[in-house]
Length: 223
Image (tube, rainbow, N blue to C red):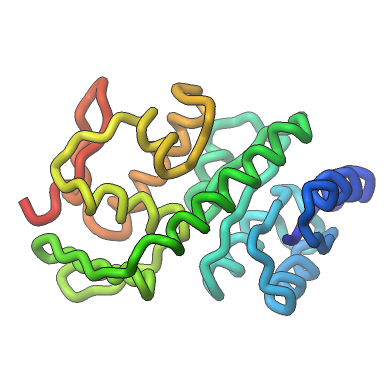
């Protein structure tokens, strides 16, 4: 696991808590060091602060997601919704706004890792819905023959929809079954779901997922 935080004290505290949970943890304190550490160590998960010297966490996230899909839990001192949506848009799977409790951080880390393990344990298959093609084994997706690069959470969200085409999925169910969150219906969770839906539409077509106002979303491909 990689912790990227420029505040030495905070970085050490997060690393100590995660090590107490049984994880092997490396630390980086700036953008370039974070990209280098991720490339050399290939951690299972990255805890990533937004505000970093060198270049910021958003750029770190873009670069590491461009190299390989890896779960990212982003830390931000910014409460502005636009900043949070940008973080999710560049490939972060989840985020926490500072200040946060270590209990919440470790719970989110475990939830992200459970999701990855659950995805890996599902028997591989190929899903075809109209012009949408998903290779679950190789984690590849294309629409009308054009490949799209998805982040880990975007891919898992798409597969969740694809296994239940045209079935309306409430946000709370998506948070529970895709994100593995214990707390449902929070504004943070709503923003996370909505942001990743927007990302899927941007990458695969605006008509891919239908909004059911007041309820949730449904995959329309192949209908």
